[in-house]
Image 1 (cartoon, each protein chain N blue to C red):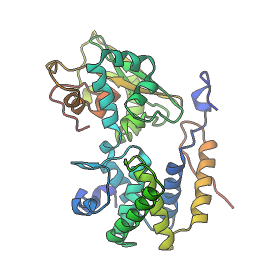
Image 2: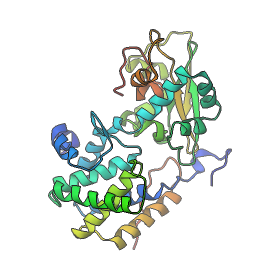
Image 3: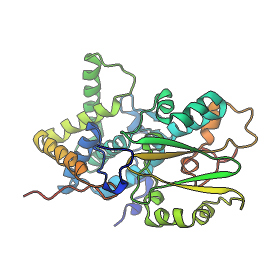
Length: 210
Length: 131
């Protein structure tokens, strides 16, 4: 049971849906018996990390750039707006979309573990799950972003959002300059996973390769 | 040994093998997944085959059977349940190769569900030791 005012660290995990549990069961049995090497499995899944989900998030973002009414709906009721594009809502967690502007930049972290809006962003990248990111994103967000090549002006306010069992955040990046005539599809190709976590911005030359 | 010792080409199935699979959801860069477990199930089949537990041809045939059965049940053929069929084919395959069995898989599934229910947020979900 989840309630709004629950302490996050007293919450229990959400039980994944049946196919996810069966996959986990099969994997753990085969690993335990020494039939498959977990490292080889992980490496294979990592190789496809960017193939899961981020395209969903990118399409959501691109739609907000070409459709102001959709943007409003997404900011107001994210779950329903995401479902409009045919993507599944999260497993009972509440989705919140935070909007970047010229004066505000948002960054998402999960200091406790690695909560992540995977229906829109796919598997979390390895660095997102790492202890240094989880602690430093809160203490020194500008320093973290600088390592990703993002230098923010001093007068830009940085907001760091800490994900919990119930709340997952998606950063809505700003539409890059020089893309006024671009189609929705072309725009979607620009939106990287990292820009929706908030460690980078989208630029007209960023390309969609995560 | 770490996973990074394995090169990408050793790990990833070549395009020809992927192309032999019936209606695999993919783009120019390879297969695409809607949810993490799908990539997990994909990786399991690829690794089991790479380790010689079954040939890729056997796998493609098992998957085709499962997809055909779904079509005969009248399920829409829009790819939305592709990985559910993939998983069902994989469960059947590991059973037929004596790598596991339905009772064992079912018990393990319940154990994981239980572990999720009893693990606090922020802690890794681990199976509890059973006697």
